[in-house]
Length: 405
Image 1: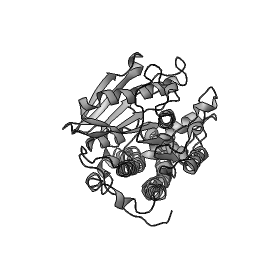
Image 2: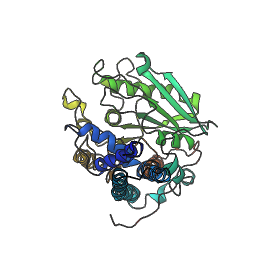
Image 3: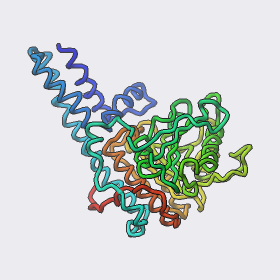
Protein backbone atom coordinates (compact mmCIF):
# COMPACT_ATOMS: atom_id res chain seq x y z
CA UNK A 1 0.00 0.00 0.00
CA UNK A 2 1.68 3.27 -1.13
CA UNK A 3 0.99 5.41 1.95
CA UNK A 4 2.45 8.55 0.41
CA UNK A 5 -0.10 8.30 -2.39
CA UNK A 6 -2.97 7.27 -0.11
CA UNK A 7 -2.76 10.31 2.19
CA UNK A 8 -3.52 13.11 -0.33
CA UNK A 9 -6.18 11.04 -2.11
CA UNK A 10 -7.89 10.17 1.17
CA UNK A 11 -7.84 13.81 2.28
CA UNK A 12 -9.55 14.92 -0.92
CA UNK A 13 -12.06 12.05 -0.83
CA UNK A 14 -13.07 12.82 2.76
CA UNK A 15 -13.18 16.55 2.05
CA UNK A 16 -15.34 15.99 -1.03
CA UNK A 17 -17.79 13.84 0.94
CA UNK A 18 -18.15 16.45 3.66
CA UNK A 19 -18.38 19.31 1.14
CA UNK A 20 -21.31 17.60 -0.56
CA UNK A 21 -22.96 16.43 2.68
CA UNK A 22 -21.74 18.58 5.59
CA UNK A 23 -22.59 17.44 9.10
CA UNK A 24 -24.15 20.08 11.41
CA UNK A 25 -21.40 21.49 13.57
CA UNK A 26 -22.98 20.50 16.88
CA UNK A 27 -23.03 16.79 16.00
CA UNK A 28 -20.14 14.41 16.84
CA UNK A 29 -18.62 14.57 13.34
CA UNK A 30 -19.49 18.22 12.85
CA UNK A 31 -16.06 19.67 13.56
CA UNK A 32 -14.03 17.34 11.28
CA UNK A 33 -16.74 17.66 8.64
CA UNK A 34 -16.37 21.43 8.69
CA UNK A 35 -12.58 21.53 8.51
CA UNK A 36 -12.17 18.75 5.94
CA UNK A 37 -15.00 20.01 3.73
CA UNK A 38 -14.26 23.74 3.77
CA UNK A 39 -11.06 23.85 1.70
CA UNK A 40 -12.27 21.29 -0.85
CA UNK A 41 -15.58 23.12 -1.18
CA UNK A 42 -13.89 26.39 -2.09
CA UNK A 43 -10.83 25.02 -3.89
CA UNK A 44 -12.00 21.97 -5.88
CA UNK A 45 -9.69 22.72 -8.82
CA UNK A 46 -6.62 22.98 -6.60
CA UNK A 47 -7.64 19.80 -4.77
CA UNK A 48 -7.99 17.97 -8.08
CA UNK A 49 -4.65 19.09 -9.49
CA UNK A 50 -2.37 19.08 -6.43
CA UNK A 51 -3.87 16.22 -4.40
CA UNK A 52 -5.38 13.89 -7.03
CA UNK A 53 -3.91 14.34 -10.50
CA UNK A 54 -0.31 15.12 -9.59
CA UNK A 55 0.04 12.37 -6.91
CA UNK A 56 -1.59 9.86 -9.26
CA UNK A 57 0.81 10.75 -12.07
CA UNK A 58 3.78 10.47 -9.70
CA UNK A 59 2.56 7.14 -8.32
CA UNK A 60 2.38 5.69 -11.83
CA UNK A 61 5.74 7.19 -12.80
CA UNK A 62 7.44 5.77 -9.72
CA UNK A 63 5.90 2.34 -10.12
CA UNK A 64 3.82 2.51 -6.91
CA UNK A 65 0.70 1.14 -8.61
CA UNK A 66 1.87 -2.46 -8.52
CA UNK A 67 -0.49 -3.93 -5.96
CA UNK A 68 -4.17 -4.31 -5.19
CA UNK A 69 -3.80 -1.55 -2.59
CA UNK A 70 -2.32 0.81 -5.15
CA UNK A 71 -5.10 0.19 -7.62
CA UNK A 72 -7.67 0.66 -4.84
CA UNK A 73 -6.30 4.16 -4.28
CA UNK A 74 -6.54 4.87 -8.01
CA UNK A 75 -10.20 3.81 -7.91
CA UNK A 76 -10.80 6.05 -4.87
CA UNK A 77 -9.25 8.99 -6.76
CA UNK A 78 -11.38 8.25 -9.82
CA UNK A 79 -14.69 8.10 -7.91
CA UNK A 80 -13.80 11.37 -6.13
CA UNK A 81 -13.47 13.31 -9.39
CA UNK A 82 -17.23 13.49 -10.17
CA UNK A 83 -17.86 14.89 -6.67
CA UNK A 84 -15.23 17.57 -7.25
CA UNK A 85 -16.88 18.37 -10.59
CA UNK A 86 -20.24 18.90 -8.86
CA UNK A 87 -18.62 21.17 -6.27
CA UNK A 88 -16.81 23.19 -8.94
CA UNK A 89 -19.94 23.55 -11.08
CA UNK A 90 -21.98 24.87 -8.15
CA UNK A 91 -19.27 27.41 -7.33
CA UNK A 92 -18.95 28.65 -10.91
CA UNK A 93 -22.72 29.02 -11.29
CA UNK A 94 -22.92 31.07 -8.09
CA UNK A 95 -21.84 34.10 -10.16
CA UNK A 96 -25.18 34.02 -11.98
CA UNK A 97 -27.07 33.60 -8.70
CA UNK A 98 -25.22 36.54 -7.16
CA UNK A 99 -26.00 38.74 -10.15
CA UNK A 100 -29.69 37.88 -9.85
CA UNK A 101 -29.51 38.77 -6.16
CA UNK A 102 -28.20 42.21 -7.12
CA UNK A 103 -31.02 42.61 -9.64
CA UNK A 104 -33.59 41.61 -7.03
CA UNK A 105 -32.17 43.85 -4.31
CA UNK A 106 -31.23 46.95 -6.27
CA UNK A 107 -34.07 46.98 -8.78
CA UNK A 108 -34.31 47.16 -12.52
CA UNK A 109 -31.88 49.54 -14.17
CA UNK A 110 -29.43 49.70 -11.28
CA UNK A 111 -26.46 49.27 -13.64
CA UNK A 112 -27.38 52.35 -15.64
CA UNK A 113 -27.39 54.43 -12.43
CA UNK A 114 -23.80 53.56 -11.53
CA UNK A 115 -21.28 56.35 -11.49
CA UNK A 116 -19.44 55.96 -14.80
CA UNK A 117 -16.02 56.85 -13.38
CA UNK A 118 -16.33 54.39 -10.51
CA UNK A 119 -17.78 51.64 -12.67
CA UNK A 120 -15.17 51.97 -15.42
CA UNK A 121 -12.74 49.62 -13.70
CA UNK A 122 -15.18 46.88 -12.75
CA UNK A 123 -13.65 43.53 -13.69
CA UNK A 124 -14.78 41.90 -16.90
CA UNK A 125 -13.88 38.36 -15.81
CA UNK A 126 -12.79 36.54 -12.66
CA UNK A 127 -9.03 36.32 -11.90
CA UNK A 128 -8.61 32.77 -13.21
CA UNK A 129 -4.87 32.57 -12.62
CA UNK A 130 -5.28 33.37 -8.93
CA UNK A 131 -8.23 31.04 -8.52
CA UNK A 132 -6.57 28.08 -10.22
CA UNK A 133 -2.93 28.46 -9.22
CA UNK A 134 -2.58 30.92 -6.31
CA UNK A 135 -5.86 30.64 -4.35
CA UNK A 136 -4.18 30.99 -0.96
CA UNK A 137 -1.88 33.91 -1.85
CA UNK A 138 -3.61 37.10 -0.67
CA UNK A 139 -1.03 39.88 -0.97
CA UNK A 140 -0.69 42.21 -3.95
CA UNK A 141 2.37 44.26 -4.91
CA UNK A 142 0.33 47.44 -5.42
CA UNK A 143 -1.15 47.36 -1.90
CA UNK A 144 0.64 48.34 1.30
CA UNK A 145 -0.37 46.85 4.64
CA UNK A 146 0.21 49.06 7.67
CA UNK A 147 0.09 46.61 10.56
CA UNK A 148 -0.72 46.87 14.26
CA UNK A 149 -2.11 50.38 14.60
CA UNK A 150 -3.68 50.94 18.02
CA UNK A 151 -7.24 52.19 18.28
CA UNK A 152 -7.97 51.47 21.96
CA UNK A 153 -6.46 50.53 25.30
CA UNK A 154 -6.93 46.72 25.19
CA UNK A 155 -3.44 45.89 23.94
CA UNK A 156 -3.18 43.53 20.97
CA UNK A 157 -6.95 43.01 20.96
CA UNK A 158 -7.30 46.69 20.05
CA UNK A 159 -4.95 46.66 17.08
CA UNK A 160 -5.91 47.06 13.44
CA UNK A 161 -4.25 46.59 10.06
CA UNK A 162 -4.79 49.20 7.36
CA UNK A 163 -4.50 48.48 3.62
CA UNK A 164 -4.10 51.18 1.00
CA UNK A 165 -2.84 51.53 -2.56
CA UNK A 166 0.84 52.39 -2.71
CA UNK A 167 0.04 55.52 -4.70
CA UNK A 168 -2.13 56.69 -1.79
CA UNK A 169 -5.00 58.28 -3.78
CA UNK A 170 -6.94 60.99 -1.98
CA UNK A 171 -10.63 60.82 -1.11
CA UNK A 172 -10.67 57.02 -0.88
CA UNK A 173 -13.76 55.27 0.49
CA UNK A 174 -13.32 53.07 3.58
CA UNK A 175 -14.14 49.42 4.23
CA UNK A 176 -13.83 48.04 7.78
CA UNK A 177 -13.89 44.26 8.23
CA UNK A 178 -14.20 42.22 11.44
CA UNK A 179 -13.10 38.58 11.64
CA UNK A 180 -15.17 35.70 12.93
CA UNK A 181 -14.35 33.13 15.59
CA UNK A 182 -17.41 32.61 17.82
CA UNK A 183 -16.47 35.80 19.70
CA UNK A 184 -13.79 33.79 21.53
CA UNK A 185 -11.15 33.35 18.81
CA UNK A 186 -9.83 34.61 15.52
CA UNK A 187 -7.65 37.53 14.56
CA UNK A 188 -7.24 40.29 12.02
CA UNK A 189 -5.40 39.56 8.79
CA UNK A 190 -7.23 36.26 8.40
CA UNK A 191 -10.67 36.48 6.74
CA UNK A 192 -11.94 38.26 3.62
CA UNK A 193 -8.40 39.23 2.65
CA UNK A 194 -9.12 38.73 -1.07
CA UNK A 195 -11.85 41.38 -0.68
CA UNK A 196 -9.69 43.82 1.28
CA UNK A 197 -6.68 43.53 -1.02
CA UNK A 198 -8.85 43.89 -4.11
CA UNK A 199 -10.63 46.99 -2.85
CA UNK A 200 -7.35 48.52 -1.69
CA UNK A 201 -5.92 47.91 -5.16
CA UNK A 202 -8.86 49.92 -6.51
CA UNK A 203 -8.12 52.92 -4.30
CA UNK A 204 -10.03 52.07 -1.12
CA UNK A 205 -8.63 52.27 2.39
CA UNK A 206 -9.46 48.98 4.10
CA UNK A 207 -9.18 47.97 7.74
CA UNK A 208 -9.09 44.58 9.43
CA UNK A 209 -9.31 44.85 13.21
CA UNK A 210 -8.93 42.72 16.30
CA UNK A 211 -11.46 43.13 19.10
CA UNK A 212 -11.81 41.89 22.67
CA UNK A 213 -12.89 38.27 23.02
CA UNK A 214 -14.85 36.10 25.40
CA UNK A 215 -14.69 35.25 28.24
CA UNK A 216 -12.84 38.38 29.33
CA UNK A 217 -15.18 40.50 27.20
CA UNK A 218 -18.94 40.20 26.84
CA UNK A 219 -21.61 41.96 24.81
CA UNK A 220 -21.54 44.89 24.09
CA UNK A 221 -17.74 45.09 24.55
CA UNK A 222 -17.07 43.74 21.05
CA UNK A 223 -19.54 46.18 19.49
CA UNK A 224 -17.97 49.05 21.41
CA UNK A 225 -14.60 48.08 19.97
CA UNK A 226 -15.97 48.20 16.42
CA UNK A 227 -17.42 51.63 17.07
CA UNK A 228 -14.01 52.70 18.35
CA UNK A 229 -12.53 51.54 15.04
CA UNK A 230 -15.08 53.66 13.18
CA UNK A 231 -14.28 56.65 15.37
CA UNK A 232 -10.53 56.04 14.89
CA UNK A 233 -10.73 56.04 11.09
CA UNK A 234 -12.87 59.18 11.16
CA UNK A 235 -10.11 60.85 13.15
CA UNK A 236 -7.13 59.50 11.20
CA UNK A 237 -8.56 58.87 7.74
CA UNK A 238 -6.87 61.78 6.02
CA UNK A 239 -3.45 60.54 7.12
CA UNK A 240 -3.95 57.64 4.70
CA UNK A 241 -5.81 59.41 1.90
CA UNK A 242 -9.29 58.28 2.99
CA UNK A 243 -12.56 60.18 2.96
CA UNK A 244 -14.53 58.75 5.93
CA UNK A 245 -17.80 60.23 4.69
CA UNK A 246 -18.07 56.98 2.69
CA UNK A 247 -17.56 54.12 5.15
CA UNK A 248 -18.81 50.56 4.82
CA UNK A 249 -18.64 48.03 7.62
CA UNK A 250 -18.30 44.31 6.95
CA UNK A 251 -17.73 41.13 8.88
CA UNK A 252 -17.59 37.36 8.72
CA UNK A 253 -19.52 35.08 11.10
CA UNK A 254 -19.32 36.75 14.55
CA UNK A 255 -17.76 39.74 12.81
CA UNK A 256 -20.79 39.93 10.52
CA UNK A 257 -23.06 39.88 13.58
CA UNK A 258 -21.04 42.76 15.01
CA UNK A 259 -21.01 44.69 11.73
CA UNK A 260 -24.79 44.41 11.44
CA UNK A 261 -25.24 45.64 15.01
CA UNK A 262 -22.96 48.61 14.32
CA UNK A 263 -24.89 49.47 11.15
CA UNK A 264 -28.22 49.26 12.97
CA UNK A 265 -27.13 51.24 16.07
CA UNK A 266 -25.37 54.16 14.44
CA UNK A 267 -24.41 56.97 16.85
CA UNK A 268 -26.23 55.25 19.74
CA UNK A 269 -24.53 56.63 22.89
CA UNK A 270 -25.39 53.43 24.81
CA UNK A 271 -22.70 51.65 22.76
CA UNK A 272 -20.18 54.51 22.79
CA UNK A 273 -19.13 54.95 26.43
CA UNK A 274 -16.58 57.73 26.70
CA UNK A 275 -16.90 58.71 23.05
CA UNK A 276 -20.63 59.42 22.85
CA UNK A 277 -20.09 62.38 20.53
CA UNK A 278 -18.11 60.44 17.91
CA UNK A 279 -19.68 59.91 14.51
CA UNK A 280 -20.18 56.13 14.10
CA UNK A 281 -22.54 56.28 11.14
CA UNK A 282 -21.94 53.95 8.20
CA UNK A 283 -22.80 54.09 4.52
CA UNK A 284 -23.71 50.42 4.26
CA UNK A 285 -23.07 46.94 5.65
CA UNK A 286 -21.71 43.67 4.23
CA UNK A 287 -22.91 40.63 6.20
CA UNK A 288 -20.97 37.45 5.33
CA UNK A 289 -21.79 33.96 6.69
CA UNK A 290 -23.07 35.70 9.79
CA UNK A 291 -24.75 34.83 13.03
CA UNK A 292 -28.19 36.45 13.29
CA UNK A 293 -29.51 35.57 16.73
CA UNK A 294 -28.78 37.00 20.17
CA UNK A 295 -25.42 36.91 21.89
CA UNK A 296 -24.58 34.05 24.25
CA UNK A 297 -26.38 35.75 27.13
CA UNK A 298 -29.61 35.37 25.18
CA UNK A 299 -30.45 39.06 25.63
CA UNK A 300 -32.82 39.93 22.74
CA UNK A 301 -31.25 43.36 22.25
CA UNK A 302 -27.94 41.68 21.36
CA UNK A 303 -29.43 40.39 18.10
CA UNK A 304 -29.42 42.54 14.96
CA UNK A 305 -33.07 41.54 14.52
CA UNK A 306 -33.92 43.71 17.52
CA UNK A 307 -32.57 46.87 15.89
CA UNK A 308 -34.09 46.79 12.42
CA UNK A 309 -35.75 50.11 11.60
CA UNK A 310 -36.93 51.94 8.50
CA UNK A 311 -33.74 54.02 8.40
CA UNK A 312 -31.37 51.05 8.36
CA UNK A 313 -28.52 51.54 5.88
CA UNK A 314 -28.17 49.43 2.71
CA UNK A 315 -27.20 45.80 3.36
CA UNK A 316 -25.61 43.07 1.28
CA UNK A 317 -26.05 39.66 2.93
CA UNK A 318 -24.39 36.47 1.68
CA UNK A 319 -24.89 33.03 3.17
CA UNK A 320 -24.19 29.48 2.04
CA UNK A 321 -27.12 27.10 1.81
CA UNK A 322 -24.94 24.29 3.24
CA UNK A 323 -23.57 26.31 6.15
CA UNK A 324 -23.15 23.77 8.98
CA UNK A 325 -22.82 26.39 11.73
CA UNK A 326 -25.68 28.79 10.98
CA UNK A 327 -28.79 27.50 9.19
CA UNK A 328 -29.53 29.28 5.94
CA UNK A 329 -33.10 29.78 7.18
CA UNK A 330 -31.74 32.29 9.73
CA UNK A 331 -30.18 34.34 6.94
CA UNK A 332 -33.39 34.26 4.90
CA UNK A 333 -35.41 35.38 7.92
CA UNK A 334 -33.09 38.31 8.63
CA UNK A 335 -33.12 39.41 4.99
CA UNK A 336 -36.93 39.16 4.85
CA UNK A 337 -37.41 41.19 8.04
CA UNK A 338 -34.92 43.81 6.88
CA UNK A 339 -36.61 44.13 3.48
CA UNK A 340 -40.03 44.44 5.10
CA UNK A 341 -38.91 47.33 7.33
CA UNK A 342 -35.97 49.17 5.79
CA UNK A 343 -36.36 51.81 3.11
CA UNK A 344 -32.82 51.12 1.87
CA UNK A 345 -31.75 48.41 -0.60
CA UNK A 346 -31.25 44.88 0.73
CA UNK A 347 -29.33 42.38 -1.39
CA UNK A 348 -29.51 38.76 -0.25
CA UNK A 349 -27.22 36.33 -2.08
CA UNK A 350 -27.75 32.68 -1.20
CA UNK A 351 -24.72 30.65 -2.26
CA UNK A 352 -25.57 27.17 -3.46
CA UNK A 353 -23.26 24.67 -1.82
CA UNK A 354 -21.59 27.44 0.18
CA UNK A 355 -19.99 26.47 3.48
CA UNK A 356 -19.52 28.79 6.46
CA UNK A 357 -16.14 30.48 5.88
CA UNK A 358 -16.39 30.84 2.11
CA UNK A 359 -14.39 34.09 2.21
CA UNK A 360 -10.96 32.63 3.01
CA UNK A 361 -9.62 32.02 -0.50
CA UNK A 362 -9.53 33.29 -4.06
CA UNK A 363 -12.31 30.97 -5.19
CA UNK A 364 -14.86 31.17 -8.02
CA UNK A 365 -17.58 31.78 -5.44
CA UNK A 366 -15.87 34.46 -3.39
CA UNK A 367 -14.40 36.31 -6.36
CA UNK A 368 -17.91 36.57 -7.83
CA UNK A 369 -19.10 37.92 -4.49
CA UNK A 370 -16.22 40.42 -4.36
CA UNK A 371 -17.35 41.80 -7.72
CA UNK A 372 -20.92 42.02 -6.41
CA UNK A 373 -19.80 43.78 -3.22
CA UNK A 374 -17.93 46.38 -5.26
CA UNK A 375 -20.86 46.91 -7.61
CA UNK A 376 -23.16 47.21 -4.57
CA UNK A 377 -20.95 49.84 -2.95
CA UNK A 378 -20.75 51.80 -6.21
CA UNK A 379 -24.56 51.73 -6.46
CA UNK A 380 -24.96 52.93 -2.88
CA UNK A 381 -22.44 55.70 -3.40
CA UNK A 382 -24.25 56.79 -6.56
CA UNK A 383 -27.56 56.86 -4.69
CA UNK A 384 -25.91 58.95 -1.99
CA UNK A 385 -24.40 61.21 -4.66
CA UNK A 386 -20.95 60.60 -3.21
CA UNK A 387 -18.24 62.41 -5.20
CA UNK A 388 -16.41 60.04 -7.50
CA UNK A 389 -12.90 61.25 -6.70
CA UNK A 390 -10.25 59.03 -5.21
CA UNK A 391 -10.90 55.62 -6.66
CA UNK A 392 -8.23 53.93 -8.78
CA UNK A 393 -10.70 52.14 -10.90
CA UNK A 394 -13.47 49.90 -9.80
CA UNK A 395 -14.54 46.52 -10.89
CA UNK A 396 -16.45 45.45 -13.87
CA UNK A 397 -20.15 46.10 -14.33
CA UNK A 398 -21.47 42.61 -13.82
CA UNK A 399 -22.96 41.19 -16.96
CA UNK A 400 -26.51 40.09 -17.49
CA UNK A 401 -27.39 36.43 -17.20
CA UNK A 402 -30.34 34.31 -18.06
CA UNK A 403 -32.94 33.47 -15.44
CA UNK A 404 -32.19 29.76 -15.20
CA UNK A 405 -30.91 28.42 -11.85
